[in-house]
Each structure stands twice: as C-alpha cells, then as structure tokens.
Image (cartoon, rainbow, N blue to C red; front, side, top):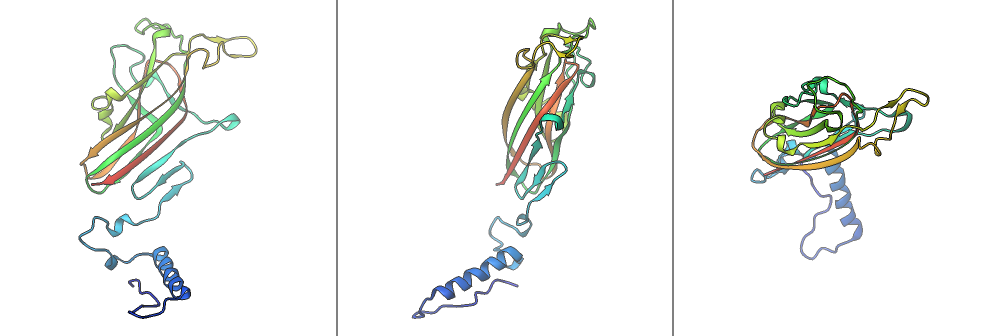
Length: 238
C-alpha cells in the first residue's frame, strides 16, 4: 500500500515533535519494507526495477548493485591466490601473432537496461616471468612483453576496438637459482618483472541487454602471475 502519514496537518495545527517524528518513523518503515509502484510518477526516469538491494557473492568477492558491479581479488602471504596469463594461449610468443585470451576469473556480465554512460575502472598487479625459453621464433628474452587489455562488449573487441588501451610490461630479467634457496635470482621489483597499473574507460553505451566486461591478455612471456586485480563498473542511465 502507498505511504500514509499517521498525522496530517492543517492550517493552524500546533506542530509537536512527537507528531513529526511519528511521520518520519512511518516513512522509514515504508522505505525499508518496499516502495509500491503506484508511488512512482510515470514521467520520471526512475522505475521500480531500479530500486533493489545489492547482492554480494562472497565466493567471488563481487558485489552487484543497481548501477553496476565492483569486485576483485586480493590476497597475500601463505594464502595468496594467482590468476595466470601465458604465451601458450596467445601465439606461443611469436612476435607476428596478436591473439588474446581471457584473464581467468576477471570478467563479469552487467545487465544494461537502457542506453547509458559506463565508467569502467580497472587495476592489476602482476609478476612476469622469468621466461628464458630458447625457441628461435621468439623475440629475445629481455624484450618479451605482456599486454593487459580492458574490453566492454563482445570479447572479439579486445583485439580490435580496445587494443589501443593495452598496457604492457616486460619479462623478469635474470633466471632461477638451482641451489638452495631455490627461487628467482632477483626479486621481481629488482628484475623489472613487477607491475601495478590501472585505467578507466568512459563510454556512452547504446547496446541494451547482457554485456560482458573484463580483462584480456596477450603475452610473449611463459608465465605471468596476476597477483591481484580489481574492477568497478558504474552505469548511469541517460
């Protein structure tokens, strides 16, 4: 039912704090228990389907709200989790190949309900290589790169429309120690194998329906560990 204030006021009525507070309490209850469609004006842009609570997916760390999504992966210490990029899914390191692949678990679908302006914020942190493989068709080890590419819409656009937004980073320089303690000869920050970068895409989007947004990868490097990433998408209906 529509909201009805417990106390109505006419000219000359004495205002009391109890009556005003009673009306406000009733309004709070109404707003929290659900607004009925009859209380919306048809001429306004807001519709009942826009008024909904956000949903939190604790497994993926992603929150789905009225105007967009936000989420990511962050971990550390003994419980650290990695996503991976690899040249074996994007051309085997050949410099004449421009294929890409999804960054695993770094894409989601947003239900676009009408033309809108999208703000897509993304950030990622990686450790690249070292890749010292010797196949002759590859560029030199120190020249190998990995590109992270944002995209909105069909995945194929990651190669075309969004290629100009790719951010690159190089291979870890130095190899692995074969005696104890086994590991990289240099830390990833010393060997230029560490990167943390971010960007924002602003787009007036006219496609109505389910739209995929995420991160794609083109790599010339054997193993790239995506240590952490985050994404936030805002959709403002025009």
